[in-house]
Length: 604
Image (cartoon, rainbow, N blue to C red; front, side, top):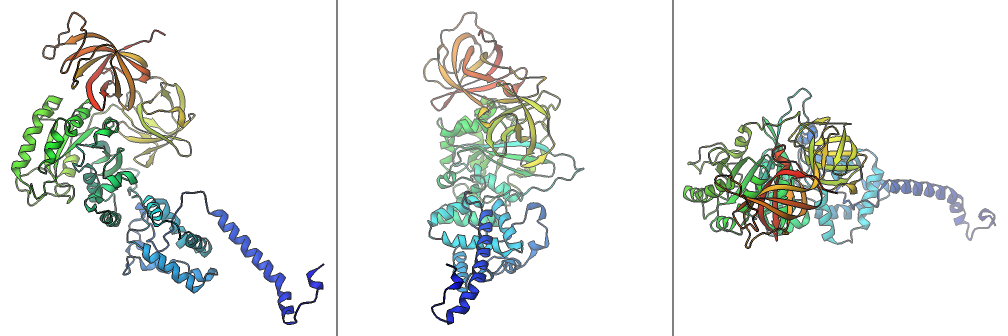
């Protein structure tokens, strides 16, 4: 029976009954609008905590815009923004709702808020878009979530607010700056990540307020001296323990050059990661701590200072800068005696590794935490007359690279992002957009969809640049680190068996045919077996023994035949040094270093 035909219970209700269909229609319309707005929300996305009172995110290329100069109010929020935030009251929220909303944000308000890339952009759309509805819906949705763990929210905020390096747009006619890859190596806790973070701050790649936020968070965890390293140690585990695990990447520019920082882990458990980082570097910075006891620990037999210097040399780093860090420590206090003491102990060892003390090594005192002698000279340190660190890097001679050689790009890492993305350093040759390349050893033909050099999109890349390539024609699962991108006309060699000259550096017992170890060659890690010892080589004269040795021991040099468990890409050292040097490791120690002399074709 139709509702309109029935008599109302009371005559007062009759008016209401008359208005009911209209109210129902309005209600349905608003519900539909709300549903549409909710449909726009990606509920399956990683939970995003909208910080509506945060400072509007200004991309790097708009830094000088007038909005930036808006006067800040007492609690660090720009006044201009406060005006642009749509009032929740308009959209059906009550005054009390608004008050509680403000309270929750008061508690969470931080001057460094809104620094995150995507998060910031979304907020900007919400705040400046003029459409109050979506922003308010998000706010109400946020209120419903308030009873979640505070810890989770902190984690989400940290993830959301990773520093987004600012990149100045390149002038179209400006000459391309030379790319130099710098790897920071050294013993655990020598201050590698802190120096990296400080350099990024001094060159304007990390904003001051982001660092202030890190400093506050680090203080809460009673780790106030760690905040600079958080610019490079971005994941939670690294921050909690204060130890780098993966090779951190960042970049900065000077007047003449464009530098990529590779922040290698110092802990001995993560040496394989460090080798991957060093294999991409042109220049190594060995960071040692001048603090009493710390230098000695790093330099003793089990310390990483020795191993890292040796691995960097094996990875093909020609130039080494030794930064004597923590010179501002009370036990050191910029003392020349301590600096010279560290220098005297290091030089003989570095000479033994193969660096030339006169040409390849440069010593320099500094303090990563205070930034002394990184950009500006130090008044307390009267005895050091050389250039500060960044100026010294800028004044280094250019590296010779052949751009007309064959394309060789060893792959460091890969992931999925609207296609297959690979990371690596272009060792030789040039790559351009839409170019057809071949992935070895699988022989997949791929096409380059887009090229990013240090997160800046370009159309072509020269040798020495750290690249991200988006590829077409191959799945992410079909790629492994250690594969090589080549041009079809000149493929790199691949195989399993090769002859190599090996120097045994550290091994307690003897090594006989049948010995297994882990081979690190360019970015590839593979298990190998020494199948035969061919001859011993005299260290001084270079003469080869006539008879086959039955074993080799520490400090001997031999030529041996090695067989890898799977097919790997490699070249002879003579043809292509970057892909012909390798390290053998076993039980977490570096046992031998060597170079590929000859590739042996597989019988099968």
